Every structure is written in C-alpha cells, then in structure tokens.
Image 1 (cartoon, rainbow, N blue to C red):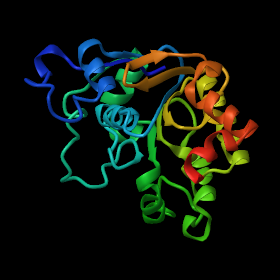
Image 2: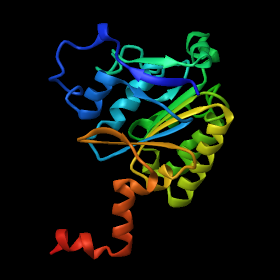
Image 3: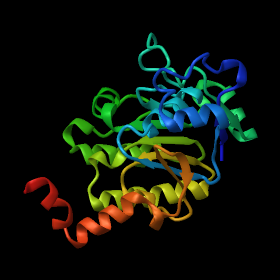
Image 4: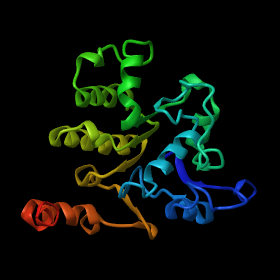
Length: 245
C-alpha cells in the first residue's frame, strides 16, 4: 500500500464548513476525523451526490495526479486550480508512497480514470509516448477503458477510478475485478468510487458505504446497492409499479 490515510491538517481546515463540498456528510467527517485505508483495494459506494467522487478526486490531487484524470507525472491543464477539498487534503503515506510521490515525475506510478472525462482524454493521448499504441477512437467506450486498464494499471502504484463501470458490460466488469484483485496482490493500491455491486465484490476489498450518515465500513452483502439489485432482478415490478402506474 502507498496511502494509509487521507486527512485535513488542523492548520489547513477551512474557517467555515458551511459551503460545498464541506457540507457533504462524508467530506465534513473526513475533515474532522480523516479517512483510513485498511486494504490494498478500497471501494467507496454510495448514491449520486453522496460525495464519493469528490473524495476520490481530492485524493488524486493530493497524490499529484490531475483531477481531470490521467497518469502520474503529467498535468494536462496546468492553469486549473485545485478543487476545494483537494486544496487542503493531505495523505499519510507509507515509506514506499513517500518515495514515489516525492521522487522524479517520471518515476511516479499511478493513474486516475474518471468516467466523465475519460473519452476526451483517451482520444487525446492515444499513441503518445508513455501511453498505449492502440487507437481508442476506433474502439467502443468500454473497449477503450479496458485498453487503459491493461496498459496503464500495471505494477506498484496508486490507481484511482471514478465510476469506471459507466462504460463496461457485465463481462468487462469481471475483467476489471480480476485486474484489481491482481493489483492488490502486487503491491499496488486501488481506490474506486462505484455504483456497481459487481466491482464491489472484488475479493479482499475494503468497502466504505457513503451517505447521509457519513461513512461506514460494510460487507458486500450488507450494501444497499446489493439489496436493491437483488430485489429488482427478482421482481422488477416491485419498483416499476411505482414509476409506471
């Protein structure tokens, strides 16, 4: 592992927590108590607006990854200010993590894939030195994502993802599960914000459920998304009758 904990030092805490994103329960809890990482693969699971993407984005910035997405050691839009949380967040690193973050840019190993910006990024860097040779503009969105995972998610490093399932089929999600599991065993660290019960089932992963309560650790079969998908697939009319009648 590279990151033990994300936290906001006392001297960097905002004077007021009355503005977004500090009004979001999981963010205000992070400011007060920090967020610890207990396993090489961590999932942040929650509804839209719960703050999971905000937290992953800020962790990326604290590790010197671009909040827009991309690989470690390169900033794609140099004049973009940091996000409010990313501007104050610090990471408690392991010795390996400190060496990687403080070393030369070319030695930093990691990648941040965020679904909402990935399509433009993939097309912009395909074929460039240090990326992948395949032309992702000739692929489906999901095939492009899988190309990034295969080429850029290799070896010890920090790999961050924000809702990667947005472009993936069921079988592609399973391929990503296998990759994340292997990365966790290789000395890498993965932090992923997701709505997918398939991704969250990665063996050995630490799952943090995010919502109005803030954060709480949960087992896979205790997650709201797992219960909801089970009910829906068992009997879709249980939900549909409320929105179609």
